[in-house]
Image (cartoon, rainbow, N blue to C red; front, side):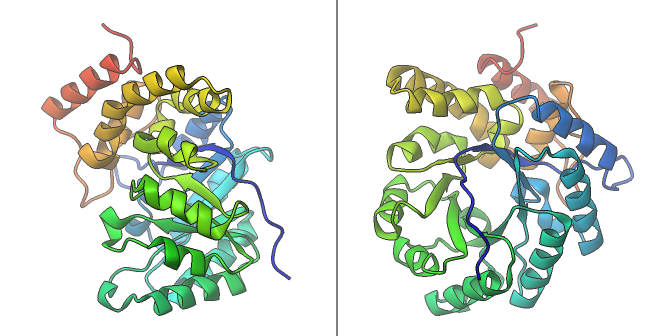
Length: 302
């Protein structure tokens, strides 16, 4: 019997993994950051997504992060964990271990090293095998900017036929395709925007929420965009959506994880260094980032 499905409505930050000056996972900082995020009306968190630098951690570190996060996340908020690896067997094993720690759902990215062989048949088999063996629901993760693979609406719909695959985080930005997934897979299959840059458009075609890097540093604004949409306050939603685009760009495709961590430091949280081979921001870029955060109303002016 498949695990009971869960509702994904809401906003989820894909939280960064903090490292200390020696490059070790800083579990105390992770706990302290979660205590701050827990004060907001976030529906939960993605632990070890792309912003969590999953691919740069070994298995022992991944499990350490899962355990630390589980202890700090209250029962009313979902803990979605990134468990996608390059091999099916490794993904299956990590998903089982995450479930045993207490994860509520697994976010599984498309394997991509042999992307030329990742046919629709191969990808359906991959996701269905993971879902067959998982005791928690599975969410597809489509992020073509990192994997070089962009799942079509038809492929997503075929994968979604498995009863234990409950939704998709789509970071591709193709809102038309999101609407097509909603149409083909039906209302029970839950679509999540993968970036705050297109949160409002995604909501307008049926997305139930978003997994948003921006929500780490601007949870109030991300929550407000969705609430304005739900309240049919289109002008307020549109104004806030547009205002957040430059900030979101800076901490995603602009300067990425190093910028997100730098922004957290500026806000008084613990961002800390990224893990090599990622490089921290230069001082010049940090000043550019600060100006963007001030302009977006994330940091006070002065």
